[in-house]
Length: 235
Image 1 (cartoon, one colour):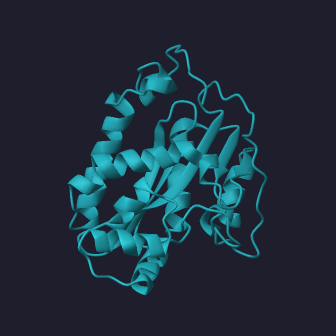
Image 2 (image 1 turned 180 degrees about the vertical axis):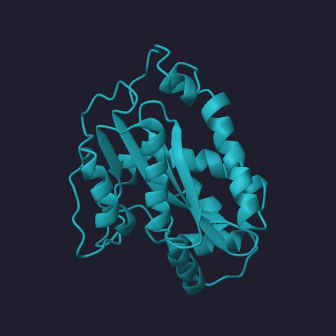
């Protein structure tokens, strides 16, 4: 319930979230809500001292997409991690997306937030689709890990990272998470990781092959990625 409401109102902190749950009939205190939101990695989107937990020894990179015209596949890729609620516990999902076409190039599920599943997704995307000119992420420690960034730098990919607390810098993959959760996750309460992997895989295949986007001229991500000559609306 917290995760679903946060998708609607990402500016809710623990106080407002606790009030929302009480209006829904759940007697829950702010401290418990704060603890659950922290466990889920949810932070209200507003300016405050620390909105992104970064590794103090990892290098970060400037945001390169401001004002950039993105008009072709493989010009910019982006990646993000989201929380997948299960009937018992939760998993983490990382996806790598082509910014121009919105195509999901690779994804991985994990029960931990270590860098391994992010590296596996990146390696799969590059093996199957080549490499982008620019790769954009947030400043999370998985994406600033030297093991992750060196894969990109060795392939001569320029690294770009969102400003601290600026989720809009990676807005297209945030929209992907919203669609995934409303179209798939909230309709199917998965029991096990294997079940979640199968269900998410089917939805991503549908999203890439069959789900049209208005900003893609009514075409699917696969059609846009394959270069079918569409007219794009301004992002």
